[in-house]
Length: 286
Image (cartoon, rainbow, N blue to C red; front, side, top):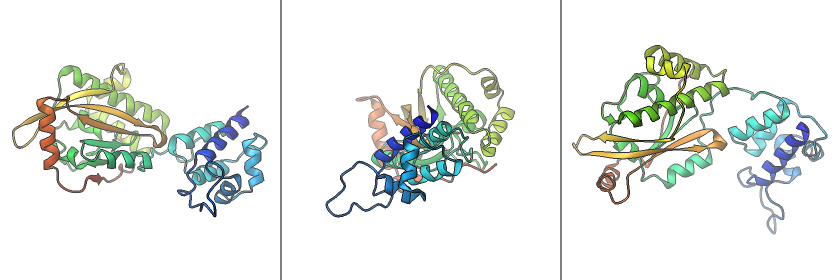
């Protein structure tokens, strides 16, 4: 049954794959099938089309190296790669929190470049932000190794120009603690993540308490007021969106339609400088 489930997953990924992204030409007259042919997948992964067929039919059990080769050839995101590993009976090869912006995250950033937004990995390290997000002027640099981590900033180095009500802060803290705990369970060998958690627990009694006995997460959004240097605050609601294929998350900040904050946000966006999307350094090594 496990072999059949693995084969079904490979076939579904093969049929959904983008041939052009894999470097496979369409050929004369265009393509007649969805995704990649078995022959094309076999060539990309370094195996025969007959072996791909036997895998898809559940008649062969893949080695860990074969799983890795298939995942690379299929352009599988982190979540799909982990699913293939589980179905084949293996642990994911590296156990590291993925920090690559996939096409979904890149497309989201580019299409919402006029909105305050960031993309973070599973450990809440910021990977890329839009220029309107930086224009809110709350994310000052600290020089610390974890300065671009959302959870570390919330619990260890709070922003001076960022205000939340007690209820919103409680929701925000619960979300961050839960996401970090989930990441630590899924990536137990990531030394950088382990160091981050240890540092926050040693510095913040609040986080340590949440780590030991987490609050229930009742909402995946919260409101905050940003105090800019021009003296005019703007209150925005942040909503957390999952990008599951690459195990990333995006936070989008918006204002209530027709409100003073919506007009104020438009002023902030118009004042934004620099490239529309800013890519940041990856998470620190362990």
